[in-house]
Image (cartoon, rainbow, N blue to C red; front, side, top):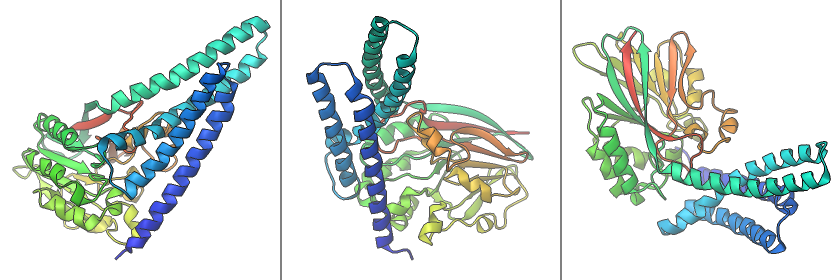
Length: 380
């Protein structure tokens, strides 16, 4: 059994790296954007103060996330600096590049001064506007419809996929209630939840979890763990989810459908289990005694696809959040083969990656909308 202190050590390491990254981002924004703006001294002072407050906000977020419980309104304020600073950093990079070319453009000094002033104003406005837009986007959960052809499937089925809710902090009872209402409207044959359902201890989310008893589908609701469950008491989370009447697939499979024309639905633990040396994914065990029918595998992280063979027709994953805040998706691509949507990995193996129904960290999304996936499985 993994040691509780292993989790604490990982959290501490993550917190230190996290803070170091944002120290560097702050420094870059200060040196390469704020100090070069042709603004009044008072305006520059306010922007410097803004950077300082944002950094301490990020430090407060780390404390609130892992060590203390605070009111939701304060948690909201502490989460914003992460996304805001990231967008200001991206703007600072674009500003830096634009300034480089502007300084070398064959134009008069008066024209250069005018364009520099315009660039200064537009850069600050751009970062502010993108931040506001990203906050608005996080509140909107879209239904993504996708048709997937499955070989040897004898009749069509509809699956509703929810992923990465990250209940806790700002993903509260009201948010989850709305998600369940939207999911039920899809009239799915079955519902799957592909990990990261909680981002807090079960004791803080019992009332919210009870909302999942209202999920309705023909063949029931199925769930697998994500990596975040390992941080908040995975055994307690598994017990809590099972008590809701949800089927938890722990390296196992079930046959679902009707009149012998259904499919195998399998699920594995998350790859984070390899590090913790417990709740380890085991595909062979998950596919034991499967029927001679198509097989759909629930695996939280898309990179698990490298361990999958031709016994599986389709993988349903999450984890990536679609990058959540553009252009963060390009960093995610270093560790995940697919970020969002439907992909054909081999001629016989497809994968669909849900962009996440909730959000992690800042309540912000840009270029990656939150989604409930309305999947229609079709005979090929």
